Length: 142
Length: 182
Picture (cartoon, rainbow over the protein chains, first blue to last red):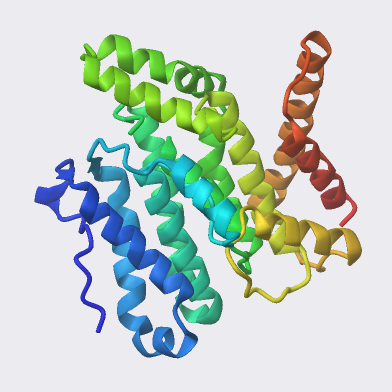
């Protein structure tokens, strides 16, 4: 059931431009995992975690499509009017992607502690890679 | 830099049963961001991108819009802001390693995990953790030292300037106090 077209960090894809739609798909996957019912997650945990881990580890090597179609203002306004409780602000795509993937990993391994090591070491690895990219001045603002 | 902001939001919002050694790893990575050089670099990043990369009109507009949207949300993408994120991320993880276990399921609210762990720590005694590892001990000590230093630096700056948002540093400072008493 989990067949998601996630951005894989395969060698030939490193530094290749990621279309915004693909990134949005990955963001949605993370959000889906965060909000899905426990039973579904438990049944497919062995595929969900590796996908999330792979996604997270690929992020520092992705080149993001330059898009500004995440404008928070309109969304914010809609949330205020409808008094909805979803996160009311949108951030840039890489920001959203990291947030949704890391949240999903934490949420899943909270319920399934035997995946904790895998999840947290992926997060640490991601942190390390991102910081290394900043130091090696290949960091892009977007 | 937006990626780091996403990481910070995720960790400070989702409760997780962190351990001290995980905190150690994370902190040792994040510390690399707090060096004066890096902060300077990040502070100048926007200008650098525009000047060095022969920015055309499109790039210029793109970067400007992106940055101004973040500023409008109260998140300037600067080196100083990153330090603030780093501190909050670190203490959130540490607080959850110290705080008694909490119910972890909750809707996604910004900084929920940080607030919850902090509340729990102020009301209950911290978990008794046998810290054996010398590395962790040293890191804990130097973190206390660093946060005190950061606090002092900020205080000096605030005295010189008008206003400086440093709520997180205050929280962190108190945090390290509670650590000493453990």
